[in-house]
Amino acid sequence: MSLITQLIDGLSLGSVYAVIALGYTMVYGIAKMLNFAHGDVIMVGGYICYEIMVSAGMPSILGILAAMVVCTVLGITIERFAYKPLRKAGSLAVLITAIGVSYFLQNAAMLIFGSETKTFTSVVPSFALAIKDLSISGLTLVTIVVSVVIMIALTLFIKKSKIGKAMRAVSEDKDAAELMGINVNSTISVTFAIGSALAAIAGVLLCSTSKGIMPTTGSMPGIKAFTAAVFGGIGSIPGAMVGGLLLGVIETLSKAYISYELTDAIVFAILIVVLLVRPTGLFGKKINEKV
Amino acid sequence: MLKVENANVYYGKIHALKDISLEVNEGEIVALIGANGAGKSTTLKTISGLLRSKTGSIVLFDENISHTEAHKLVSKGMAHVPEGRRIFLQMTVLENLQMGAYTTKASEVDALIEDVFERFPRLKHRKNQIAGTLSGGEQQMLAMGRALMSKPKLLMLDEPSMGLAPILVKQIFDIIKELHAAGTTILLVEQNAEMALKVADRAYVLESGRIVLSGTGKELAQSDAIKKAYLGG
Image (cartoon, rainbow over all chains, first blue to last red; front, side, top):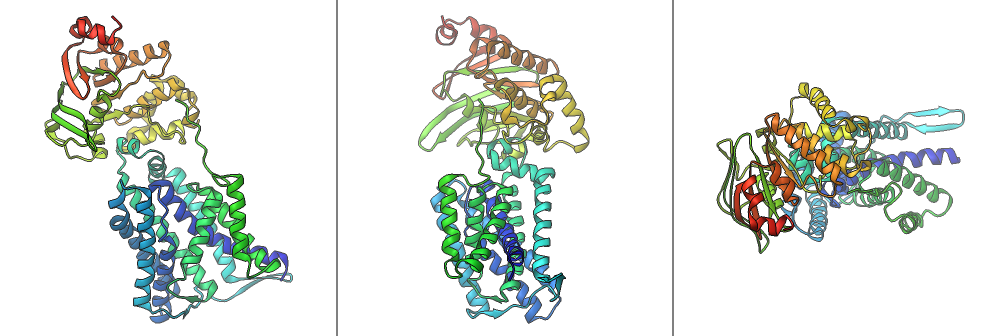
């Protein structure tokens, strides 16, 4: 395959990482916690879509919508029952809880859907775009377009909308936001809801690419996207996007040109180097405070 | 307008406020003075709902607000400019003001922003600037302007003069007087007792979490104990 095809595949994978990384980074920015169950929300989204689309034979768009609705409710529920009671607890307690939620979701999926890999049919009808001798699959194209639209929409939402501004205010100073009349708890819920809905879309796209789903489907992409978020500077929205895209491209290129087996090692080695040079990540926030 | 009765607040095992009772009547400027760590900021945080009192009651406009969430108090007419200003440093000046108007009707926001710019012309020139780049005085003005965006009936100011040059302190106090003249009731926390007692109708003196003295601003300014402790002789 040519370099350009590899780059496009890398961008496609990277844009899914970016969408997942947005969920990590938004939740980190607002609740100051690493939601390690985020990857498993991806898996739940995949299963819901699978059940509607493959088992029930309904149109894929219904599967995607159902996945988004279920994941949104799931995200809000996780926050309400697992994380909210720990709002004032130490960060270690929250971290352990998040890992617990992650295992809970994986095992629940194993009970409900079984542990074997199920064949996932792509939500995008199979077609290919041919430009000269370059051929891009419909799924790759849709993945990139959907992810880019999500990223632009989310950026505008956070920059311009009233709720988006409230989210930024809460992420900067919870007490001050509360004094403005902003309901901090419901703002945190909204953040989880958005992140989880995005995870559902990412889950469907990922399963469509890998053509399979099982209860641990979300773990690796979850960790990769988390890496992307840290890579870009956790808490930073553009950071998550750039980090995700870079990670996808690096991963695809090293798979193609260096070593398939060593890919993950290379990706994480690059993360370590970046963090050594820039501990706050590429877009990490350095706050200049004047008093 | 505001009545705090028998408030006791704890930070873990530390008993920070002991049996605090105070009252602010409509149209007054009331000052809370006292040394560092006396419990002045804790008192304001308890009134605005960021901290909870274990006992007693807080009544605002005849409504018991002891258990009301902080964010619900803004639309009841209370605004609290916290210690250290706490403006949103990564947001623009304009966005900070919009956050102040979070509970205000959308149709009124533009006019209120104009009012704030009229009162603080320096903010107008910097409206698209990130708040973190403002000087200390400008940040204080932004914090006050942001609080005014909710059209408060009761404005609580925590150390508005902290860290400011004398000329700016005077300016801030002039603005406090203007706001008061325009009908805003003010509860002012200050370490600068001299300035505070000059503008205050009444004042309470806090010492290690207790109110030890209260009276009119004039009375307290002339009291020997106060002169010794806070006014430098």
